[in-house]
Length: 244
Image (tube, rainbow, N blue to C red):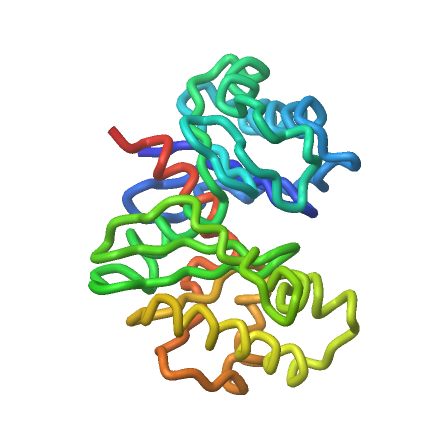
């Protein structure tokens, strides 16, 4: 069974059809830069463009970088604040003419990793953290998602953690991998103290370069890169759309 997954990020919007059973993209993904400013109408037009590109006519799953409750955006991380209070599900369904499911972006990535990735079969508390424009989080307890945790906004040294430890912060502050790893370690120690996870999964675009920083991060919890890397959001969005 194939379903279209679309992943909205602060810098790019990407999508592709997904084989739900295998958790694999069935066509090369299409990535379009996130509009500036990233207002609802402009982002929705990109979502519609991706749907048209694939000639898609079925269910669509879309991720959003913020808290999503019953399809409505309650926060807006790294996108325009005009999103707050917007019924994203109705907006995307309106521009595509297709039934649409909308969920938090890191939650989607986490669902994919728990279903077909490194978290499959893992009990206890599992924490998925996506490092990109910000830091997204997905928390699982014995395989069940606790939605909308948004742990990138925890305070660390007087700032939101993602302002110090996201991949964007690494690039903006021109940090070496070693210096950035120290920031990541400090952040992981903080969430480790709060949740005592059995496993921490590192996702987002930077997961493709895990060998450059993960060996430098020393915490008590086992920390591993995401199997699906930066495609996890697309896969999880499709899975959410295909769920009964």
